[in-house]
Image (tube, rainbow, N blue to C red):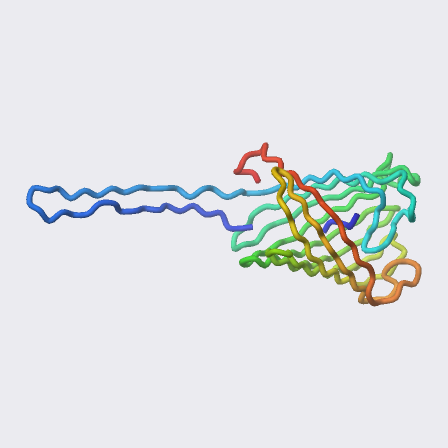
Length: 239
């Protein structure tokens, strides 16, 4: 699983249309009808909940638990992200991601091995979205800190470009540096479920980003299949 790295100004307009014409014939009254139609309210915020069970925990090309070809004893990775609409096409983003398993004794407690939190801003202009996030990954009694900048364009293949910048290695065992990830993803709707097929290729700008003396250059590629089901129980006003 890859680490997680999701509006518009609220508007309310009144549309008035003038119906009818003034008749010029004597004895005919002029009839004017005005119809006022309020615009539909937009969502103030949206939330995304993921409950993922993964065979491997892969973070930017690194097999974190070193499971290799072993498909037993996977990890449970829930995540939750909220997005609030702000003026001028901006949005505020807040989220968290957890890694839960019993592979090693936890420094946090129970089966909880890692807690990530992130906050940032998004901006949208037409089909182009720009997102900036600060992330704090807490694990093994350390705090790895990340600054991500992502550009995404909404079209058939939904291309994206992410600059993943580690500014504090924490307990990662690697060095500060940058990974550039280029991706595309095509989605297909099948009733209430949306399937997407993401393809990503990463380039390591700096040496030793991960432990083990990894050189800069082409880092990894990934191809996946995701299924998404929208929960509308909160109603339209709340995403």
